[in-house]
Image 1 (spheres, rainbow, N blue to C red):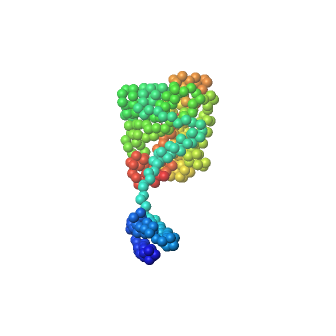
Image 2 (spheres, rainbow, N blue to C red):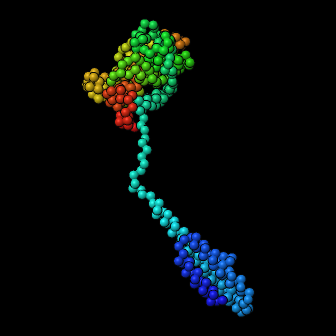
Image 3 (cartoon, rainbow, N blue to C red):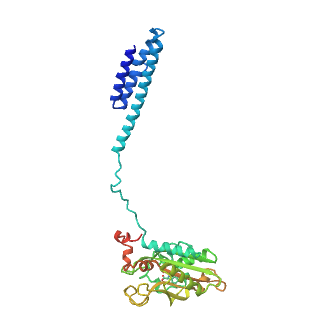
Amino acid sequence: MKEQLENIRREAMDAISACGDVKELDALRVKYLGKKGELTAILKSMGGLSAEERPIIGQLANSVRQTLDEAISDKGDKLKTAALDAKLAAEKVDVTLPGKTRPLGSRHPLNIVLDELKEIFRGMGYTVVDGPEVEETKYVFDMLNTDEGHPARDEQDTFYITDTILLRTQTSSVQIREMLAHKPPIAIISPGRVYRSDAVDATHSPIFHQCEGLVIDKKITFGDLKGTLEIFAKRLYGEDIKLRFRPHHFPYTEPSAEVDLQCFKCHGAGCPLCKGEGWIEMLGSGLVHPQVLINCGIDPEEYSGFAFGIGLERIAMMRYNIDDMRLLYENDIRFLSQFR
Ligand code: DAH
C-alpha cells in the first residue's frame, strides 16, 4: 500500500506539473483527491490494515494528500497569473496611437462680444432683459416720439407685417415696454435682433443686432451717460481708448449724441479701418425725451434718464478687425474657428 501511495504521489505530481490549463487541473484534482478519487479509495480501504500499519499508512496518505493539494493550488495560481499576463499582453494599449479627435465648436464673435458687454453692464448693476422682435408700431415708433411721416417708418426701410405690426427696426422699443412694466429706478440693457430693408453689402445687412440701454432715476444727467459709456468703452477696448460725443438728433432723446471711438489702429491719424476719419461711430445715445417719459406715465419733473443703442456687429468688427459684415453671417468654418 505504501508503494501504491508513492506511485500515486509521483504520477500525480508529474501530471500536475505537465498540466497546461485550469480545466485539466480541475480534472486532476477530481481524479486524485475527489470523493471517488484514487487517494480516497486507498484511505477507504485502510480498514483492512493491521493496528501497526494503520497509523504509518494513514500518515503517509495524509502527507500525499497534502502535497497534492498544495501542488494543485500552486499550479492553479500559476495558471491564473499566466492567463492574466497573456490577456494583458493581448490587450496592450498603444499610447502612441493617435487619439480620436472630437472637434470642439467655437463661440460666434457676436456672442463673444455680447457676453462681454453683458458682463460689463451687469457689473454696473444693470439687468439684462428681452423684448419681442415682432413688435407693434406704437412701441417701435409712436411712444418713442417718432410720429407718422418720420423717415424711419418708411415702407422702403421697414418690414411691415400689418399696418401696426412690424419686425422691429431698433431695440429702443424695449425702453417703452420696460417703463410701462416697471416703476423707476430702472437700469436695463436689452440685446437682440433688429430688421431693416437694407441691401446686403460689407457694412449692411437686413438683420443685425443692437443692444439697448436705459437708465431712469432721480437726478440722472448727461454726466451719468458720459461716465457710463466711458467705463463701458474702456472695459471693452482698454484704458487708452478715447470717446467723442457728437451732437445728433433722435426723436426720443434730448439732447442726443452719437458716440465715436478714437480709431485704436491709427489713434486718430486716419487709416483705412476708420476710412481716414480717425474716429469710428459706435452708438447713439441721449437723455430720454420728457415726452417719452410722459408717454410711459413717468413724471419728467421727478425723474430723468439716459438711453443708448449699440450696434453689436460694429463692436465685433472693430474688436476683431473684421472688414466685411457678411463674414458674420455666412457660417464659414474657416472664419468662425478663428474665434475661441
Ligand atoms: N435706436 C437708435 C438706432 O437704431 C440708436 C439709439 C439712439 C438708441 C439713441 C437709443 C438712443 O436708446 O437714446 O440707431
